[in-house]
Image (cartoon, rainbow, N blue to C red; front, side, top):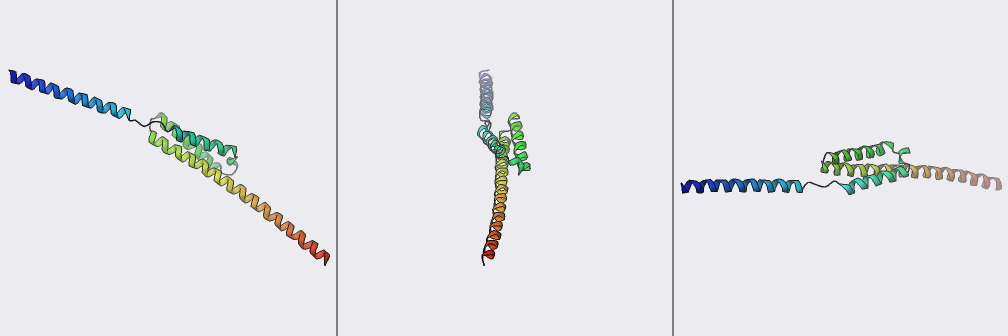
Length: 135
C-alpha cells in the first residue's frame, strides 16, 4: 500500500506541476500582447492634418482619401486587438498622406514654373519690340 500511495502522490505532483506550468505559460502569453501603435497612429494623424492644412485635397484627393481610409482601418484593427495590422495600416496611412502632400507640392511648383515661363516669354517679346523700334 505504501508504494501505491507514493505513486498517487507522484501523479498528483506531476499534474500540479503541469497545471502550474500551463498557467504560467498562459499568463506569459497574455502579458506579451503587443501594445497599440500609438506613435504610428499619431504620426498618421499629424501627416493627414498637415496635408489638409496645405489644401492637398485640391491636387491629390485620392491619396488623401486613402490616408483617411487606412487610418480608420488602423483604428478598427486596434479595437479588434490586431496590433500588427494596426501598425502596418497606420504606417501606410502616414505614407499616403505624405505622398499626397508631395504630389500637391509638385503640382504647385509646376504651376509656378509655367507662370514664370509665360512671364519670360512676355518679357522676351517686349524686349524684341523695344529693340526693333529703336533700330
